[in-house]
Image 1: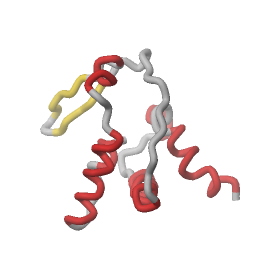
Image 2: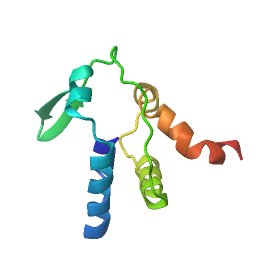
Image 3: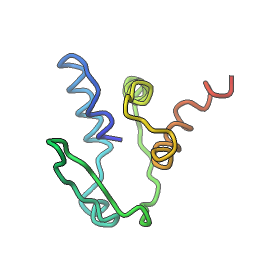
Image 4: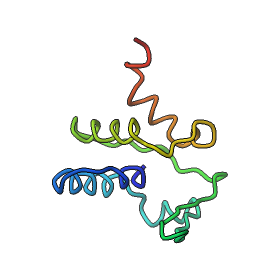
Length: 104
């Protein structure tokens, strides 16, 4: 999710707010090791991969209304989303953020 937030555009204040939110959501070094997370530069862009057979226990985050709005905006405007292959990781987040809207 932090990488998704990193592609959002905005003014300096919005960018700083997104950076703060990314820092809040970032994995700890122990969590990164637990899922064997790796970073690589591909065509000038950072790519993040991990062992999808490994998992972390769920954790709760306290987010402000403004942070929730930024998460929703990131998902709604994600231009590179591919429904089938990308469904596994954002699906729980989409369900949590948009469940009320999807039921109406």
